[in-house]
Image 1 (cartoon, rainbow, N blue to C red):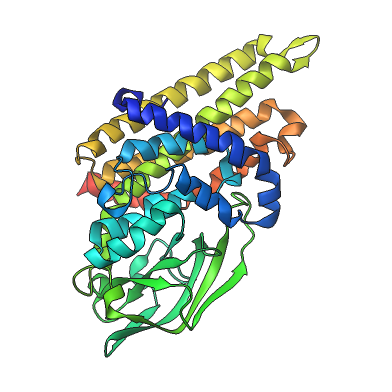
Image 2 (cartoon, rainbow, N blue to C red):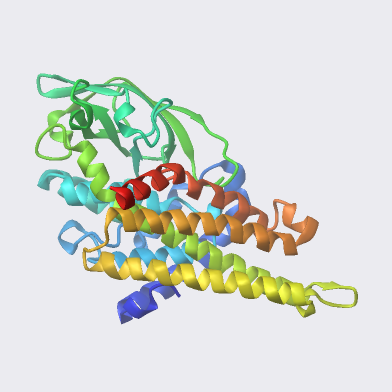
Length: 381
């Protein structure tokens, strides 16, 4: 298990709770939810009842008062459900922390208890048709008008957007100020002018709803600004990237283990030329190489977790963890799929779904091409 050296008794209890939830509430419904393109609303409420959402929110805001290791445990158990599971991480580990770390006391008291219970689902909207990793290129604006901001623009590829009650929106409050002109605003999705676009069809993670969002002069009060003043959004986003990229690395490494276990079972059962394919030297050499590769990546991710728990993980180290884990995940799953032959190309098999689900990890939380640039610049400065 990833990070087992950091686990306490409460983490192990949480693991058992999460495992039961995945087995009972998620795995039986994967095909149904993939066809729907989303999961039923009550799944979020059940997750809240079981304490699976926003584990690191303090008790004073209605949370369980856990730590980052609870998120690590959750990621590993959720990996067994793959892209047929809800995007809990986008809610708990990506969106909610902006309120916890940078929000006002009023924002924390209003929204964090609802995020913990599942009463409110969070999404974060950064990406636009013309701005992905280049966040400074966003065109969505928020213009101050008295006690309100008026938001106008478009976002795309937004996870959880179909059911979200609150979207954290990256906007230009001062288009002339570059990075210092970006702010984050809380936008309730029942406000006039907020429009959900079409459900986008993805090659993987099909049960996790992904939409376009449109903001047609949406008015929100100035009190919905995240942070004490305008212009802090870019730096807030950069501050969260260390944990976001580490969590992405944990998810990729967890998926590797799930696929390896599935492949090991299969090669022991599948026969060719009168014997299990596990008996062939090529299978043994391939599996030895894949297993040792997984262990090496797990060790690096665990080293990063240890540093992060002490607040010492650098942005470059987190970028390297996400880069290598996602690249290795893609290669490892591809090589494992080969053992399944034609069956591995069929959507109903877990290995085919894992192959499709993994691809986005080289794009999200910072494109791997961009991460290489960041790491290279740091090494060569």
